Length: 405
Image (cartoon, rainbow, N blue to C red; front, side, top):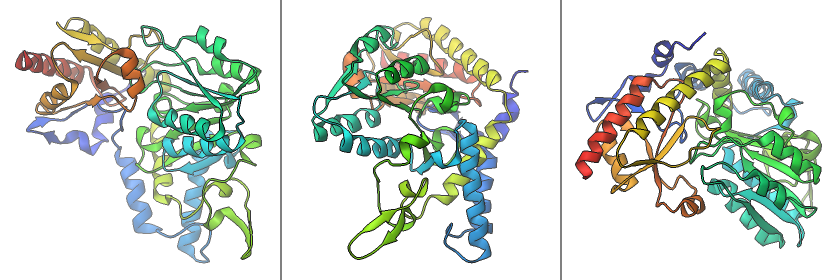
């Protein structure tokens, strides 16, 4: 059964507005997705009905807020197929989740050990490990990509060694749309006794995630790319690895006992969640997951595949346009350059037509240097986009091309 995209769009208030006098065509979903009314309602309901701090209060509102907050944790745990609820750690987003892990890794790495990343990393999954290696004396190694934007898996296996202590890689490239074979690569890394982290910022919005099936030790993602609020994210970690992980921040509920001389730390998940959490964000993220689960993931994938196929077809028919990243296995992202035009100019001219895309280096400067481009224009698609919007994108690109000629 295919998706009823018209009905889906009606659930997103922002998609009804106009920009620069034109109907909004929102194609910047890899940066952040729009929010359905169900998520907006969940946030409003929390603030109007049970706004209180969690865990500590001896009153009804605090009890209710705590129940909703911990129910949200269970919703996330079930969605990603976590083994236990305590493995879900609330963060501000993917970046904080990766930094939390990197902080611990930096304390455990030794000179002579190696950390493996890829050429397609977002800065959040590159600079973190770069700095962890500088602090520890370990060596950072980078797996190259192929000319089509896919990961060079032969080089991945070649770079793995007995010295590999940690591997971190994206589930899906935000700049290219490439889907990496993370299960296969995780198994290879685990065979070398390395810990493995997956940057799931892009992966989580394109189908259900099964962290147990992947076999990794850590998986991080952001709520705002999954139709949820900004400022909330998740770090999932395997319980046996995470239970003794070095603490990240101190204060509040992560503490078990305190004296003036010392302190001890609580159990998971509290030990890695210092301070008042983003309660509304957690509840909003759970609402987003519950909303998304009404749709069949096969239907979602088929819809996004059709959008990308149409965009690719039109791109190949457009004079002077070059697609950047054309791996066989990719999802919902079309990055491109236009001869004689800077990506920022393309974005500006499309915006005047009500079309929202992303331009620049996409927080992947080393990747752009590898590709020998200053940046790209990027259209990214999701469940509420239509084939008509893809056509409008290329109508806009052709108008921009003529204006820039």
